Image (tube, rainbow, N blue to C red; front, side):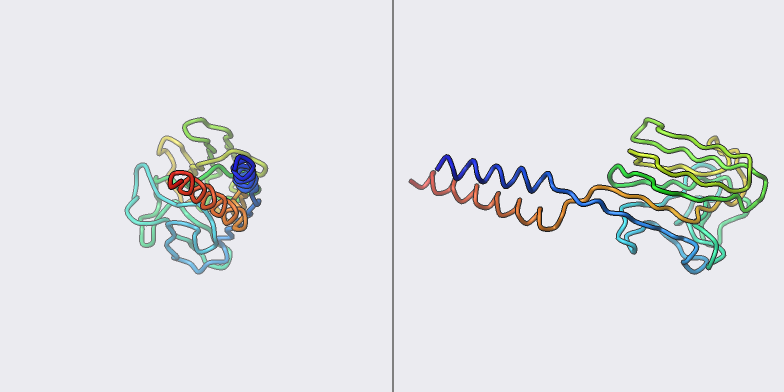
Length: 193
């Protein structure tokens, strides 16, 4: 009986420790213009998109200029210019493999802040109209505009966001479930005896 319990515990531990690296590539420029997005679940992702701060924040962020545009800090039919910030939240920590962005207003200011919870893990401020970042680990949130203090008043676009995270393998989850079922059955059998 003790051997069965140890074997069950070993199966559960192994199953819980096996994870698969999942990579999501959100190329917003491939979506039609004026597509409202609240998440990238359509792409199998774990990101949600919201607008916050001053300006027109009612509704979901949208894509503009389909076929080469990006996800913006404004909503479909929203006002231009806008002072709202585009916020991307992840349901678990991710590694930002690549992100490209640009300022539609061409005033040459882009600000991206990368957070893990309340801790800022990276910040990018460019004086050009566009830029990119890569290799930023342990990110749970990205905030983008041309002013973190609502000072920005132009459309900002994220063209491509590629990120990766560890997700449990379906087979591992099944093994863990089988191990838990066996453990429960053994406990019930011991109680009945």
